[in-house]
Length: 298
Image 1 (spheres, rainbow, N blue to C red):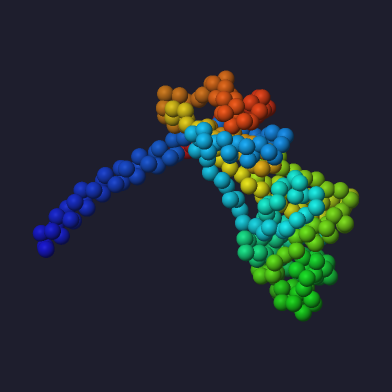
Image 2: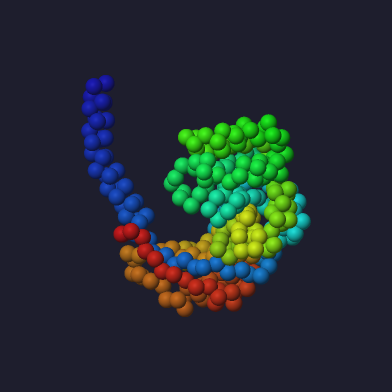
């Protein structure tokens, strides 16, 4: 028994340098990456998403569907289902009392809401003098959660608006939010709104923002299904990020210590056009994409 223990100890000691060196090689490989990343563009039709996924399954491409961040399914919202589909989720929203005072709400998959007040200084404790009028906050709770005054008191204590040495802390509401009602409220209160999906094209995100005159009064962030479709060419991996809004974003990764420090633009654009053609996407859209080059830490 003692002999076996000595043998095991000796083997362990001999293996330590090998394990450490293997870890070093792994880190070196991980960080020694070069890449090209693009801005997002829109293909012009949400139908391209399901079409590309269907083709990728039988065309030898690696693909994965991105579940994205948590969120609640709000049910049918007139004017949005035709744009986002029937299974979009709401991740979070901001409701503004003023440009310097608002509260943010994030939603988990089970319907819980986590909300907190924010001011111009994100590191400061949110004290009573920074809070909006309590009646304003109470009204938003009534609309979103259907609560009465007594129920709201548990989340928005009157003392928080009256006692100077109390600051507002993040709280969680376990009642399912009525997204339809709060969005209708924002539409009624606003004079204009915008819908932006460009900043997260290919990732499935979009933001609807509501304005009263020039003042922002609220924003809602949505998420739709998105996917990554990849193709390997030598030491390089070409990836198409695509979402059901029709947004795409392109990415290339490769070893920067290989014989190629860069890839000629004509070469990688031609390959992406071939991938687009294979997936039934319009190849001419590749010409609209702008790429940026980057490298890892080492």
